[in-house]
Image 1 (cartoon, rainbow, N blue to C red):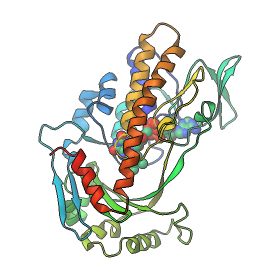
Image 2: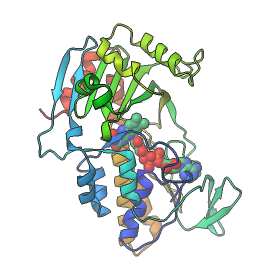
Image 3: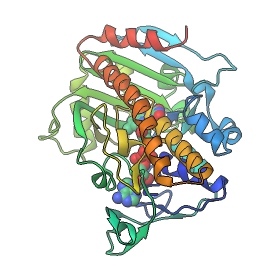
Length: 366
Ligand SMILES: Cc1cc2nc3c(=O)[nH]c(=O)nc-3n(C[C@H](O)[C@H](O)[C@H](O)COP(=O)(O)OP(=O)(O)OC[C@H]3O[C@@H](n4cnc5c(N)ncnc54)[C@H](O)[C@@H]3O)c2cc1C
């Protein structure tokens, strides 16, 4: 297994539960080597099903935040347009911090940290060869690439690389929002808050412990920051405030109080990315089907990991046949989600803000 993200850890966790050891090769030198990122909503039939297969659903329920399913949409002038709140018993899509999810999936799994894979070579005399940045190499019977958007495993099965969607997301965050910015805390509510304008959006998501992640999303060329030093927090702030000029002051406070800014251009793989099966190698999660971040990627990644592990553990025959059948299922399901999320991004960060509202009206429970 290459990669210890949601896909890789779900795969390893389910195999482990069935008594099969698996080597998880992870580039990060330690679990907390970099900030884990924002909050994830895990759907009942996807991410939660994967946790169930790993025997972790009860622990997830204890950690997750059902109240985080709340969603509020404001107009650029600050008017509240929609305010959805979950019922007390609603467990359809609770939120969990990425760091909490990682620790839950990690459990007692033995991950080999600091193993930076540079190349995967199938069909050698010893099996599938994995090469590392430090010059070492190791052979395996089956290599599962769950190494994310810029996968080093992917070239072993497919020449395709991600392309830019035309939408950039600049991320910032606020700490201790309830005590330091109570007005913003009230504006955001218990879950997420979003404002949609012409080709731009501001989204705020509450994480646990009063931490809030803010995403300023806009259509722009990849080099939109050519004349900007991205490390200069005040320069980026001013540039974003100019971009969202005219929006209500309380909404812009999300940018005024943000601590640091991270530029995250949104890349995707083609909607129906498939490949000719290569014996001994496959891909899971973002490595196989990177799509716009609209609530599906981690869910699919985890379910794929859990399903492939379960199939391998229960099939005494040729593992390659299991992988081949799994790939067909994964492609069909991921293709549907990629289509939905690609269309979703067009409507959410597009020329007509009414389209964003209409999309939420379609997907939110009434
Ligand atoms: C802002 C944002 C919000 C999102 N919100 C949601 C959400 O609410 N719900 C949802 O379902 N999805 C969400 N997603 C999508 C989700 O984050 C991804 O789809 C998911 O993380 C994919 O999991 P993965 O395991 O395939 O890849 P990753 O999470 O990218 O994990 C890959 C792992 O492989 C390791 N790795 C990479 N290269 C190498 C290498 N060469 N050698 C060894 N290891 C390597 C990495 O260090 C990492 O640990 C969001 C994404 C973004 C950007």
